[in-house]
Length: 238
Image 1 (tube, rainbow, N blue to C red):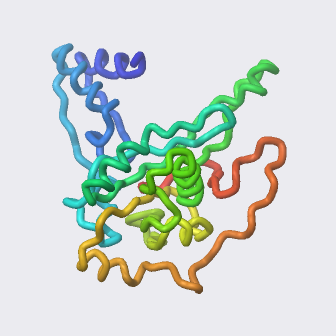
Image 2: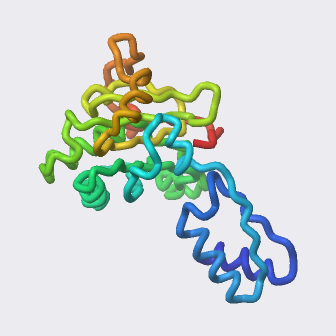
């Protein structure tokens, strides 16, 4: 909120640009900034950009068949939320697909270093399709309504719009150990599939030749969980 205030207060007297990944109106934070900037009398101009909200159609699923979008956060030892599940369930009951936006951790403070008087940040972390599916399956075991069961169809997407984009479709169980490569990843929990959607998805269906991740290794010294992508900081669009 304080950062937003600094942006729109300065915009009353000079030109200020806020650059974001994706389309600026796909996040409520940016909508709030626009409302508050207008309240101060600042003129606001929005320049739209490409977004995964539209690019997800690259896999052949029809955008009109999507319901509510959900965000999947990284679980930790003390926080394993399931607030996204009712929205997936609502979409599934309505035979709609669910786009899952996967968590990104950038510039997370290193609290151990801070205790030593050092200002350091943890390496960027980008949730993978694999981690997303593992968490969905965990929540399914807890709730048990069947909307994220191992046999539910899904589509994993990585680096959409890039020459190296990767799209693989299959059941959640089949996709759990697929190697989707580097970030950024997204995931779709499929609702009812139209015949045209099935035909479009056919080339992307998982096979015996689909690249797989190596078996997981035990965590060491709090390292990232298996499947979490840790990179120096470069970010793809999707």
